[in-house]
Amino acid sequence: MNLNLISIADLSSEEILAILDRADKLKARRNDAACRSILAGKSLATIFEKPSTRTRVSLEVAMTDLGGHALYLSSKDIQLGRGETIADTARVLSRLVHGIAARVYDHSTVEELARHATVPVINSLSDFEHPCQILADLMTMRERFGHLEGLKVAWVGDGNNVCNSTILAAALMGMEMRVASPPGYGPDRKILDQADSLGGGTVIVVTDPVKAARGADVVETDTWVSMGDEAEAAKRVEAFGRYQVNADLLRHASDDVIVMHCLPAHRGQEITDDVMDGPRSAILDESENRLHSVKAVLEKLMVR
Ligand code: CP
Ligand code: NVA
Image (spheres, rainbow, N blue to C red):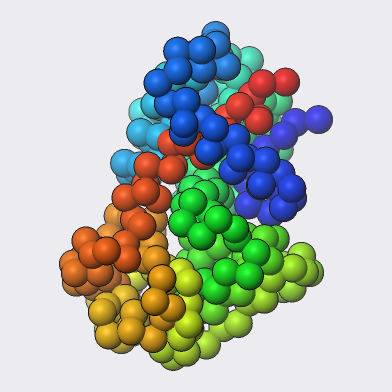
């Protein structure tokens, strides 16, 4: 059986905890040359339909640190961009490499890649989910609080791909999540129903950011204008005006609150400079943990 990571819910809570344990170990062993045998001789094709800093760099450095090799394939530069089918791309890459990571506009593209590939496929962001980001986020929360179960997580802003994956993770890991979005920009109904069916945590959707932030251990946000939403930018900036993570909002959260953002940020829109650079920010740890957590994912999927 092929093993993929398309949705965070492809993993059970036990598998997530095992990945986080392994990521902690790999973080402690960052400079241990013995890690270079873990993926020795393995290659990962990384397809990007959209720009990336953290995802691209973490995948490439992870493969290098584990002794393997990553290939950066902009969708514009490979034949996929000229109309070669997703299925043929998946079949051919499966004969050449040991894994495929893909950042795509349409979630169905990464699902189709996975259907036709015979090597593991990793969703490195689609319009619907961003599972690799959420593993780094969970790792960061656990580093700060020592546990995940029972954590109160407030999401303030767009009910987007990162929000969707966080909701599923909250349900899997027994967290209490409150999402505050402007009317019409809340998370997808399918995701909320799926979270319900996973049991475990609770997910509540509100419109008032203060209601979400009250007593929260984690306050999380993301851009108001995701990649692919650019045509609606002006309308969105208008709709999201009061959904900003700032010092006033944080006054309602727990005294030990941490602030998270997957980045890239639009400083002065969804988050203020003082919060982003302030003492409650866990944002740079979150970015660094993309590397350690994705190593654990690559090892799980590619060492068989
Ligand atoms: N957080 C994240 O996925 O960042 P990039 O778009 O830079 O990869
Ligand atoms: N929601 C953002 C995340 C970027 C990492 C986007 O999809 O553009």
